[in-house]
Length: 166
Image (tube, rainbow, N blue to C red; front, top):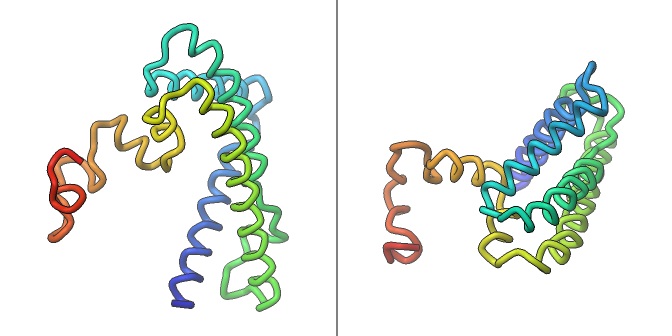
């Protein structure tokens, strides 16, 4: 159990570092970052099948949400490239605490914006918006949860409780 927890914590740390590295590329000026944010908002609005009036309301709010979420998820670790095996116990514990704090801040941002998005989006649109990004990406590509053309592992097919259509 402890080993699994540490593996999950290490995985989250690597993902957060990759996200931060992509968000703050050298040479990416604020105008370019704003343009990427706008394109992302337009893409999500398309996935939610919003009409023009809904898009005018949604896109600025989504851009604000994405920026707030990015800031909340930022983790300030002393040495990002330090190997886990090189960390002292205290450094490792501090890093885990910082990851938890980051996750809590991100969840608070998601809950706050959920209330704002809930004012005009349907429950299905809210689900699409807040489900994990890898699932949104797969759905947009027409893939199932196990990849393109991949059957589910034995014992995991047939939807919930074996009922088709779920």
